[in-house]
Image 1 (tube, rainbow, N blue to C red):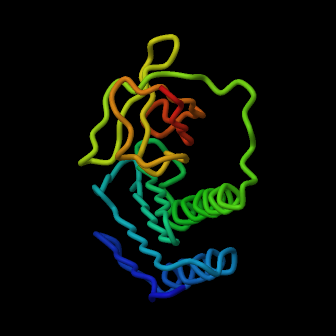
Image 2: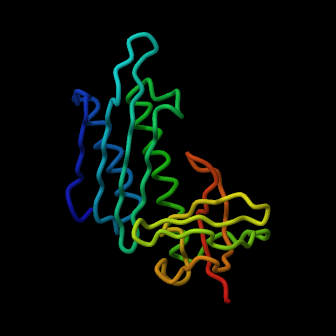
Length: 183
């Protein structure tokens, strides 16, 4: 890694075991990709819950040339986050999978989905880096600037035709890959 990892804690006492666990997980990421530039990890306890147990929020930002990969695991959606080491481990497992997927995409080994739907960009927020695609059945599919694989995010306009790969994100349907089609 080109810069030392940044680790932050909010409302969490970083014990030696937690720090060692995170350091080991970062080493595992670094071993997967020698082009990693930076890694930022944030572990927080958003609220203390006396009766039902604490739920931990873990966010990992990984920077590599030309892209940033983010894993943001919110506690309300993951009951396993009552155990801090399990919450951290799950976030790093997800990050490893996304890192391997990104490396495959850059090598041109992306799986071609035979039934990639086509849609139209309904709304695009260039300043914020995201937009929404209108799917053939009319539902909205979120996409982030990093999902755009051919062309530039700034080239995408409302009404543009796109082909995309839809998956279920933390907050609903999202496109993991967006390809701009001709007019």
